[in-house]
Image 1 (spheres, rainbow over the protein chains, first blue to last red):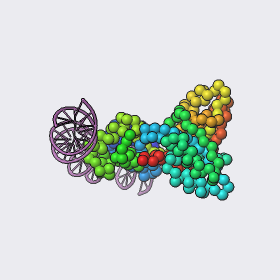
Image 2: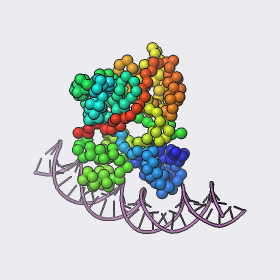
Image 3: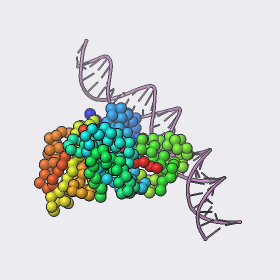
Image 4: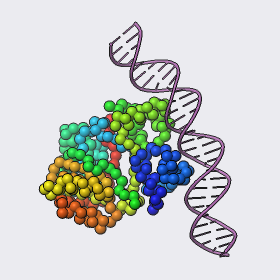
Length: 145
Length: 145
DNA sequence: ATGCGGCGGTCCAGATCGTCCGGCATTTCG
DNA sequence: CGAAATGCCGGACGATCTGGACCGCCGCAT
């Protein structure tokens, strides 16, 4: 749906969402009002869901990151999902096909905290935890082509 | 390191990174210059890594999302990592502890495309693919407290 | 062909916003 | 106890955004 200019706008905002309209316009070769118009359209259409800040978790005390696969025990699926949503240290969770029902990302301050959180799920689901060592690919957009 | 005001600034920007300085200042109860100063400091300190746009993948043709666990065959670790980084449909990848060496998120336009990409890895690693059905928790920040 | 209408663009002006400065209060440290 | 550093505010100036008026292109139908 978005054309080439829209894609360039998105790409530019992906690298700096706080860029001024004027700069954006300059880079895509349009006037500010036109750029503003396109931006608004992209938001209204739902292509752009919003603008956010990228925070370094380590700098705010979250030194440990884990990816947990979660398989709820029979009949516990909804309770487990509820629990996952309510735990704020879960920063991302997908419901997927396959044996593991959920895959969640956790940000915690220590192994102890990780253990404490997993304990709350232990009687409702089987879990499989992997500690993140490095991030070869940090969150990025798929090709806009 | 960041104090309460910094955390409020971050929280506000997390919900709308394009908010004007003036609005930001109004919400945290500071003047524009002070807010600007804090924002700059947060960026310089690396607490804030940058500002980005959140795009709905489905609206740009990526109707399918998968999470793939990847276990490189002996001696193939670096080749596999290289490959993962180079495939732009991989929008996120973590190197983790445990049997699975990498956990990657893929955005693709079809099952066929997913298959094509996994084929490129097939002779260098064992893979385990889970298709994302829903996202109970979409990307969010851990508690800033 | 040609005239019409809609879409998407530019230009301009008024309003808004961001940044730079000087000054003040509080805290820190010699 | 004094001096310097920190963090904040207000005002002024320059930059930016927004909305309106206008224009050109293209598809369509007369």
